[in-house]
Image 1: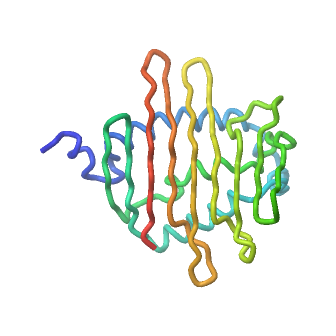
Image 2: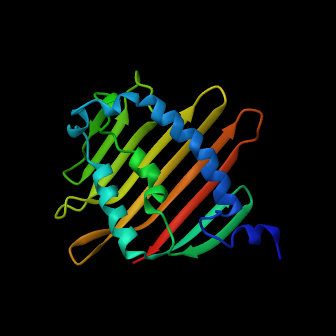
Length: 209
């Protein structure tokens, strides 16, 4: 049996070789992001929503997906290696963690973004030139009736002396029975550790609801 295929036999424990490597490198990004937001736990401040509540939307979707356990078809590519796998055994909070991190309602993010609105259904936030935060921009298109996202896009960047990473994340929802459910999402970018080559990667998930 192909050694790479053997690595893909289990979805989560362990992950495939490609997904496992991407996830391990992503820990460095999350640590960087958390370090940038150490004051998030200040009492009462997190209740003030200056920006669209993306974290709230994703949190509700996580609860729904963990209960319904839909099958996900996931395509992962790292360099020239590519694999497709399917599973219903998914920890959706971990799976959608980067979208939670893209939420801008953190105390350390206040007044750091320019707000652009083309119309009532479009939200766009861009990091100001004098600010240094992991989320460089966030775009959200909402269903004007349900007031929830049908499309989300963000760019997350982390750089320090030993690590650099860029991740463009996208999410699309579908409307069913007057509810919006996540239908697909993708993560595309690169990660690089000092003295190691750049590792471009893509992850795409399609949820069978």
